[in-house]
Amino acid sequence: MNFNFERLGKSFKDISDEFNKVLQKFKQSRNEKEESLLYLQTAVRHVGVGVISFDSKGKIDLANKAAKKILRLNRIDNIFLLNNLSKDFGELVFNLAPGKKTTHKITYKDESIQLLLFATEFKMRNQIYKLVTLQNIQPELEEKEIEAYQKLIRVLTHEIMNSVTPISSLASTVNQWLTADNHAEKISKETMNDISAAVNTIKKRSEGLVGFVEKYRSLTRIPKPIFQVFKAVHLFERIQILMEAGLKNSEIKFHFEVIPDYLELTADPDLLEQVLINLLNNAVQSFGYTLSGKIFLKAMIDDRGRVSIKIIDNGPGITEDIIDKIFIPFFSTKKEGSGIGLSLSQQIIRTLGGTISVTSEPNVETVFTIRL
Image (cartoon, rainbow, N blue to C red; front, top):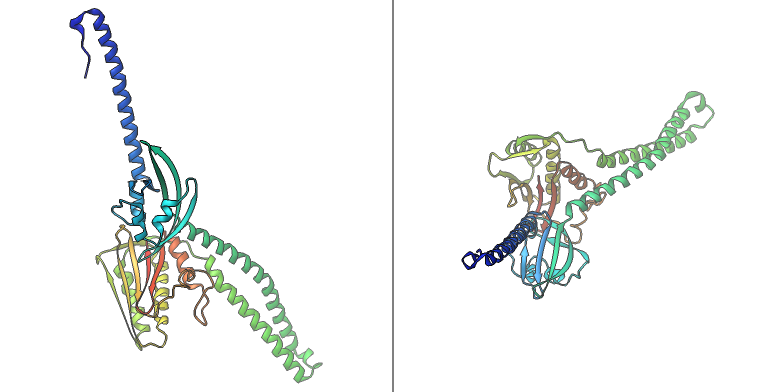
């Protein structure tokens, strides 16, 4: 649209020109605002942090791609529908005070995630809106947890080794001195036997403590992974040979599946094989004296486009009160367990750039899921 008053005379032409200049400025300003709006919409849509905006009644005005991915929802119209994901989650988000942060745990069928929520409030078109950001901080929590455990283990092993090594050395020296012929003549045979037995006990106990520490040192000595591209089916075939050899005297059935059969993994095959064998052995041991059971190893592409490896068994499972503790170093439900197997497995998977999680319905199905 343009103004044209030229037919009304020169003075009207000047007015027409001024009107057109003003109109051009309005057009330019509008285009700039539309460009800015488009830029902001694109940024919000593709930013890695989940963003949800809703009005005072909970009606969602905006939910970006990251929010839908975190919440595993294709569409969400009202904030209270989040109660279907986790108990009272919708109310938590709706009532989160502006400027406040909180965390919330959501448990899906195959994994649990820890969300960090932050809220702010703004007014638009005389309507109050609340904007909440969502971040999955589960990987960061695991990373910090592992880092803290490793620091603790380094301190413990340093202090224990400083104490145990001289004891072991001294006990060995004393034992050699007591058994030497020139000293044995001055001590009765019975006394010497008692002393020798006692010193040997000290020596063995010291060696046991050294072995104990060395075992736990493995948590901080994970080798640097050598990444390779290889077919999952080849890895699973090697594991099947090992499993069949160990299960030949039991009625526990093991089988694997790779979908598609040409699926390739990018990882350190030796480290990944170590983790899978550990998880499979745990599954076998969970059956106890039960002769029958099923263990299923499966590799596939999950709904988020990541390679997913699942170890599934129908054993007694893991109860709700301990499932959050099983990856903690030194925690074990086994009588003779060291409590480092699952923690070590978690750290190996982290070094491979992946995650490991577990879900369990006791006596029905337990699933360990590795994502790479």
